[in-house]
Amino acid sequence: MLTDFFKLNEPYQTFKTEKDLADHLKRSKDLRNVLYEPDILKPSPPYAKFKIRDTYFNNVSFSKTKLDKVVFINCSFEDCLFIGTEIENCEFHNCKFKNCNTHKIKISKTYVNPSSFSNCFSNIGQSNVAVHLFQQLINNSIDEGQSEFRRFAEYNFKKWQDRLVINKFWNKEPYEISLGEFIKQYPPSWLYRYFFGYGLRLRNFILSFAGIFILFFAINYCNWSKYELTQKDLAINVYDKDSVNMASNFYYTLDATTKLVDSQFQATTNYGMVWLTLQSVVGFIFLSALVTIILNRFVK
Image (cartoon, rainbow, N blue to C red; front, side, top):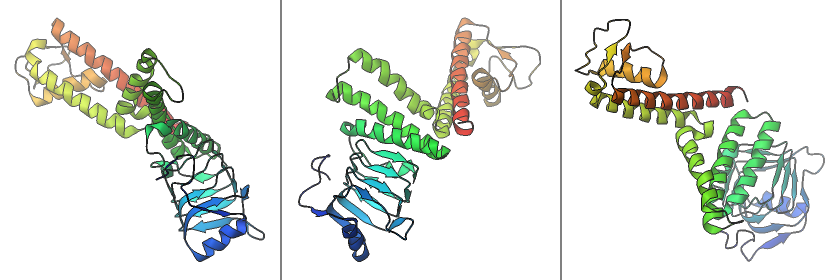
């Protein structure tokens, strides 16, 4: 773990040239406690790319360095510094970053899965760095036409934005916001993430809708007789306004929340109408979220 998130742990050695790094990688797949000093890391002629495979980087700094046409394969980076690093025309295949500082990093024309950075940050005080990183990953994914990568990067960008709001309120970093501003920003965004995955994750929607449907199913089951339901156009054999059964309750709840079926049941009491209206409003919210998820997945 880095003692200071913006400095290498001492002691460390300095690589003055690209050759120093290349020579070390020929001898060992373990690189620790190194400050890479040159302004650029790129392949030497006649090689088109500089490939680094199966290497573990620990307490290594590539700060203020441009990585150009470098390919990392099955590499792990832990407690490393990429402060002001410019990554261009690079590739990261099956790589992992843990507790790495990517402050002011620039990423372009690069193949990199944003999930590689899932464990890059360990505490809320690093949220401003995380927001910047995932914004770079969003832009890179859009430019490179990597829609799946874009969705993952955007989800994490929004998640760390929420944590940045908490950091501003509790720790007053990088600046302080008021309680009113915190309440305005954080709770709605948290609910949107928890229930709908920011409109980016279908599984959040499915689990949330299943939970809400089961809740309304139970409420309708317990209060069936209070609704004083009547049939509208068609007679339903399983219908009994005074005695509930699983089938009739299922179709009524499905009708109230989604309108996918017409259960032919209509509440006639104020109590029943209140619950019907509430379920319809919640169903409309979930339908709107589903449309957003579909657009994010298949249109963008």
